[in-house]
Length: 81
Image (cartoon, rainbow, N blue to C red; front, side, top):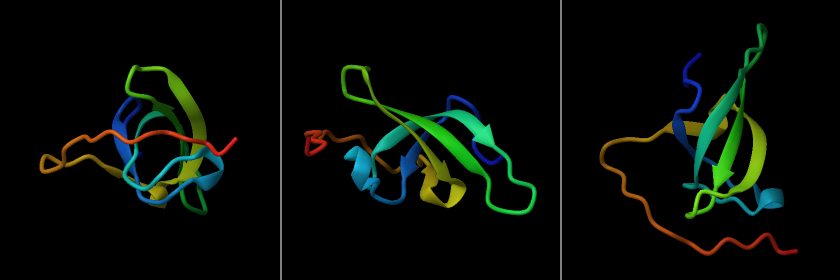
């Protein structure tokens, strides 16, 4: 398992159906090992106040670890609904 449970990670791609954008931060809540393929992760995404706005499952290639040279920023969240 590359990413640990409850680790914060960054989305590498947009998840348009959930209103999420590349660079959004999410928390790993489950690891889904795949013996003959790419592992997956369930992620929980929170707004700036700590409320859950999405729970998604993505392949490992869609996320990356945070690094020390990154800073947080804030954007408006709109799902289009």
